[in-house]
Structure formats: C-alpha cells, structure tokens
Amino acid sequence: MKTDKRILRLPEIVGRGYGTFWNFKGRYRVCKGSRASKKSKTTALNQIGRIMEYPEANLLVVRKTYRTLKDSCFAELKWAIHRLGVDAWWAVKESPLEMTYLPTGQKIYFRGLDDPLKVTSITVDVGQLCFLWLEEAYEVTREEDFDMLDESIRGESAPGLFKQITITFNPWNEHHWLKKRFFDAPPDPDILAMTTNYTCNEWLDDADKRLFERMRQNNPRRYRVAGLGNWGIVDGLIYENWEEREFDIDELRRRTELHTVFGLDFGYTNDPTALFCGMIDRVSRTLYVFDEMYEKGMSNERIAERVAAMGYAKERITADSAEPKSIDRLRELGLYRIRAARKGKDSIANGIDFLQDYRIIVHPRCVHFITEISNYTWDTDRFGNKIGRPIDDFNHLMDAMRYACEGDMRGATFSFD
Image (cartoon, rainbow, N blue to C red; front, side):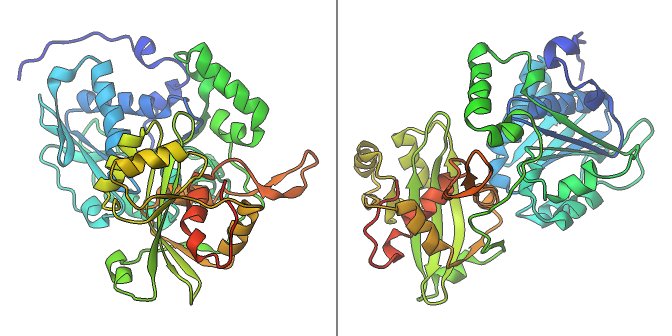
C-alpha cells in the first residue's frame, strides 16, 4: 500500500515529562502516576508510534477484565491514532476489539485476564508479538497472573526489534506486589520504574488545577496518591474479612440458602454511580460479591439502561435515600423494584458492624470493589488517632453494599446516608 509521510513534532503532541519513558527499550517499563498525569495517553501515543515504526511488531493490551478495555485502553489508542493524524492507515474493529495497521497488517490485540487461555494462545499473522501493555495493573492482585503475561512475550526477536512490557497504574496501596518487584528492586538495565503526576501535564486548565488544589487542602491522604502519584499508605482497614476468589455464579444461584442483594449509590461528576451485586448466606454468614457497575457522569436514563443491560432490571435494588427524585425516575424507567434505604441513627456504624461479622468473597471481575475494600479505612483526627468514622473516600461500593444488605440486618431501623 502506498503511504504518504507525515512529519510530526513529538514535543507538541506528547508534551513533557516522558522523554526517558518514550525512549526506554528494556524489558519492563513501569509507570505509576496520579490522575491526569498523561501516563495512559502517552503510552497510547507511544504504542501507536512503535507499531508504525517497527513493521514486524504486534501489541497485546491487557487489563484484569476484558469488559473494561473498550472504554479505557481501546478508547485511548483510538484517540492516539487521531491525535497523530494517521486515521486513514488504521482499521479499528469493536467486535472483537482489534486494531490493524493497514500498510503491513500488524495488529493490536485486546485481552482480559478473566480469560487466561485467550491471553496465552495468541498467534500473530505478521511478525511477532513483542510489545505488551498492562493498564491499571493495580487491579492485578496476584503476581502469578503477571508472570503468565511475562511468559507470553517470548522468543527470539527479529533484527532491530525488542520485547517490552509497559505497566501503568495508580499506586493506591504500598503493599502491592508491584512495589517490591519493580520499585524496590536493585538497579537493573531491564527495569525503568518511574513516577509522574499532574504537574507535568501542560494541557490542564485552571479549573483542573483548582480541583487538585482543593484535594490537597481537603483530602491530603488522597492527594498523596491521586495528586502526586506516591504510594498509598493503608492503615486501619475497616474490612479485613474478605478474599478475592473465583466462583461459579450460576452454581451459587442454584443454592436455596442464598439470596441476591443489590445496592445503588448515586454519583455524577466527581463521584461514580456504583451498583453492588451480591449473594448472601445468613446461616454461614458469607457474602459473595459477583458483579458491579462503577461509572461517572451517568444520567438516570443511562443508569436504567445499564442495569437492564446487565440483566438486573427486575431485581430489588436498595438505593441511597438522599436522592428520592432519582429513585422515582428510575422506577418510571423500568426499575420497578428499586426502593430507598431506611433512615435512622448511627446507620454507617451499624452497617459496618453487621458486615464485619461476614466473610466477604469477591469475584476477580469486581475490580472496583477490590480497590475500594482494600483502601477503605477508619478516619483519623489531627493527631493521627483513629476515630469511629470511615474516611470519605473509597466508599461508593462500600455504601452500596450496606444499602444492599439492609434487609438482612435484623431489627434495624437505621439509615444508610
């Protein structure tokens, strides 16, 4: 295929802060960063550029669950193609997710760790699979899952090629295996482990910067991670009675001692709307978390549409009582069994106390729930002493879980505000 050359000035397209990242060719290129640090967009630009630069290279893009790829990495790579002005040279397919560089036939493949066989069985048509991008790597809680990915990028490289795994994530918890493996490792020419934050993003406007300044003043704990890209220090977890484990949801549904529970916490601009989906066994005091919805900017119409698409429109959903108009509207839109959580005193403390007595088993696909429950801690006073109140953070699915379990809290008349 005949192509026209385009001359691009990368500093004008990519911006500053990622020169070393862009040029590094060792095995592991690891970047932890804050929100708005450009890490995902820079990675997307770099990967599109590399496919076009190396005619034998193919890329595998991975997240913990396949369903999260379309609105994250896939969207970022489409944006990068457009940003570089090379739309005419790329074919983009959504079912299944795939991108093809038309002049050579090189491909970008998308896979989720929830289907490991598809990760390890990729056969490329042109060249070799030599690049891998693991996005939101914090979601991958088992190091052995990463080892499986690492082993999938193997074989002798063609002349001029190199193999590389790019890892990007928000560093919510300092106890994550990523820290020890890459950031605490001795100097190694095959490892680039770096930290970036919003201050290197020259395209943020004044409103964006004010958002971070408010975070710095009002929520220093979150600012250290989401603002500066530092490791989150997790101390005083509220729920320590949980584990991540695969289970067969259909098999659970056949067990008569279990019943489903659903809870909805409203959000919009800054906070996500969160739907908790669980099954509870009151005899063994076990709560199974099997699905979730977690998304910002959702109108009531969009919420109803998504819940229906997930297959839960006919379920009894207990929602945040602070938004009665939204509850009424969702009922009009087809969620006929939605209801408001009850009101009363000490609702949060009583709800937490109830759930602490349960064993919570989380399906690996519930990545947002895992992030929240592993960071949901007791708040502290100005002297650093724990107080009997949870932090106002990582609490959207945590609140939705309490709403969902309201009916199982015997004799309770309290609120879930």
